[in-house]
Image 1 (cartoon, rainbow, N blue to C red):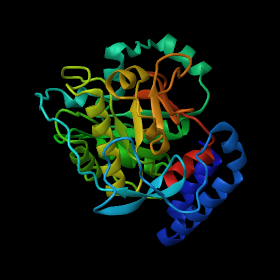
Image 2 (cartoon, rainbow, N blue to C red):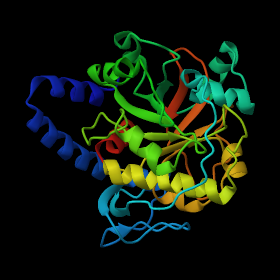
Image 3 (tube, rainbow, N blue to C red):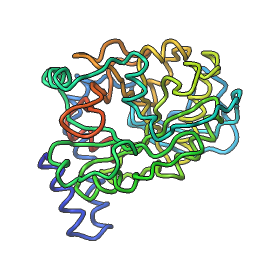
Image 4 (cartoon, rainbow, N blue to C red):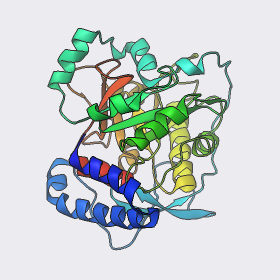
Length: 334
């Protein structure tokens, strides 16, 4: 476990919450300042602007009606997000196994590639970045005291569609937090079941919320192969792109921060219109079980998270964060 994470954990336990908040905010500002030079080299940023940016997309995103400021974790700026008003076709399918719809399982079943223990170990040796995992009800209750020393972050599945919540979410979300590990929640999107905005609301109110406490990452949208039927859920590329915009904008409207997007390049290029606009708002979490992250979706010049194996030395899928620990903390601070 890194020194900065231990300090954060101890501070959270030994001083009042108000003081912790002040320290975290200050620490976040210092971390951003001290790593600005390295970040500029490793991670291209959009040019700074003198005024908050207004959300603009290549889809029918409204520019009137209810709005609020939200944090853009890509540009590190506050932007104005408007509540979505569009909708996409809904053709609900029978959902029979939501507990089994995890990032790694679905990805592997659709060409992500199996990672036997030996193969996973070989890939791990070639992967650089801060270690982390993603888990779900598939893993059940976990002993975080034994896992925490080996990882820097964890994402736990919170919801799917508007009909499922992870019964082990409290253990998998609060457990890491209690050990000083940075944690986040993810939602498994089912675009033909209900609108993107509806599912974002469900996620935000069932574990997917966010607070700038230095230990909570923005929520993540797991958008990928359909575990119940047609690969692209019966939507056209334009409709899928609209659904995703509705989700990310509604999530930002609900929580005050734009979410991370998880997918594979294959699914993204097949099922969406490859709108490069997402790269201005949503950090990308690429899934690819190989010794490199491979090609990224349009607009992205780097990945923020990489899921490189569906098994490994720790429970769940194996991931890395692309950056220093101070940058991971900054993502959790907003």
